Length: 185
Ligand SMILES: [Zn+2]
Image (cartoon, rainbow, N blue to C red):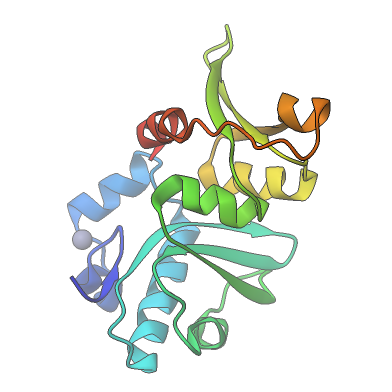
């Protein structure tokens, strides 16, 4: 299916009047109010590029004065610039689109810029949960960005294999990673 997949209706974004089901998504906390502006700008920008590529909106977050947009699908030429031009959001000076493929693992790998070896969701007594991501080398910046995009605290740990013997092939339990992440998204 070609086109841009958004969590809110195109007609609602165009008219600026959200229907009941779109409003409910925001009330349930699946989306933030300011994301409506981002989605509107993204939709207009996507149309302006004339692209027919399949893209799906995953999440966005603001870090510093940069808006990060995670989109699943192939890179669309000129889209980032077009979003920057049409988006008027307080405190946002720059737009950075993170394109990824391969679901949540693909997004994490894009953010960390390395292979994700394992993912575990750890629950605390107070009911909050943390996502422990095993990588070859830690990256605090990526942890922060992943936390705000995935809306869950992400902590990265270096794999034992990396620590004990560099160079040996790593055992990748990609199935476990998938299972944990599928429940999140
Ligand atoms: Zn709607």
